[in-house]
Length: 330
Image 1 (cartoon, rainbow, N blue to C red):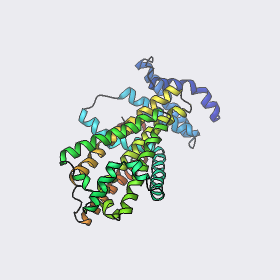
Image 2: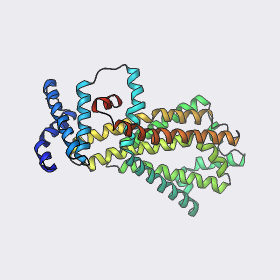
Image 3: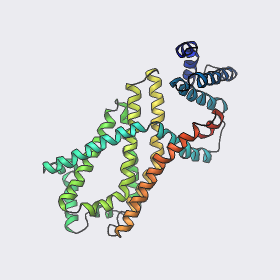
Image 4: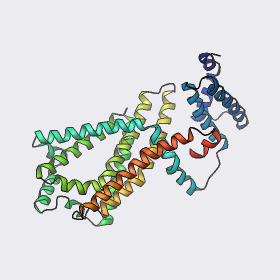
């Protein structure tokens, strides 16, 4: 049978499965089980006769999701939380990683523009960062401690305030994706401008290396996490703009679910960044080797958990059967 004939023959049944997954629960459990058997037969047929086709991957993912609907059982809350960060979150990030790259590109461009604009316009830094912050930083530089702002409150107060604010910014970047990705792009762009303007201010004051060695103690994880949250916002926006073969409302629901998982998965990383910023960054005169050790450790965590581990996990489950794959994905 030609592939197009195979698709035309079964597409209505497959669309019925999609409808079920998106909230139409009219199919009875027994009927769903019977249809699932037919779906796995279709998958086996596609694997045999169309091994390089997208239809095989489509049926594999659809069968996996239906399997979860049929056989899922209640697990201990602790086990579910563990499974989320061990399997669900890294796999979701890997599958949607292109949106992170878009978010990263916006941040790189806006940071560069912020640095160059500050270099060519003396009033740009004050416009972006505000007079109060700029004047305070100038005074701190004169006193020999350009990052003294991180000592302006006690450790716990600083940790709580920064962590809550970072989580707020990440959810804002995510939710503004509702405005067709433009809102998320705005948040990423303005944050990039501030980052670039700040670094130029420190460069002009002649303390760029000193300030960077302190700021990037927490900034490595913090900035990266905000960029990832921006990617989650772009997932929502693009699910509205480009629904592909789905109904727009179904695509939106699917995109929102994916993006929400990404943002929720970032919470521990914002807590880690908050701990570093509240309890460690204030010690700006610690040995440079210790600072570099913390920054490198943060980079290693990011590279391993967001890039190496998800790819290895994704490649691993692709070689498993549907039953075996089920334990890896909620």
